[in-house]
Length: 177
Image (cartoon, rainbow, N blue to C red; front, side, top):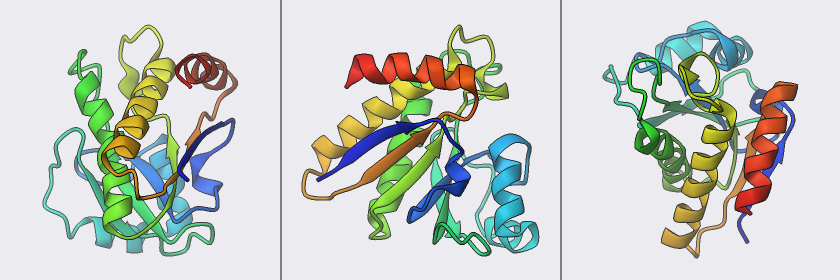
């Protein structure tokens, strides 16, 4: 049976089949959770694996690489969230980043995944509540995935890292489930 949970934690330390990297469209090491994941996995090995993909990826796309040195996950799914500073109404693309990550998980016969709040930090732009919007799109994507693939069980962990993100995410999470 599929499940979704909200945690006040880092997605990079969860024991799951795949950790999601809030990736940029070039799949290069960056700041925030992207930098943390590259550091844990090993920047050189992960960078070489990412370089095998033709970039730039589109907002909403997701691709998979091994997790290399990460002991808590087998794979990293790189989901490209929209940059709301550039595309202020990219809600569909944010939904797709979550949904396509779950699809990549299933396509690789994996069942557990941990997400950061995609596009909730610097990519949140001028959104009033980036953490809440990211949570909303994650829950929408989870519900759509479970509806589309009722016979495929997934366990989704949505991770809100900061105290404020957790407070805002929890309000939306509770309202939608």
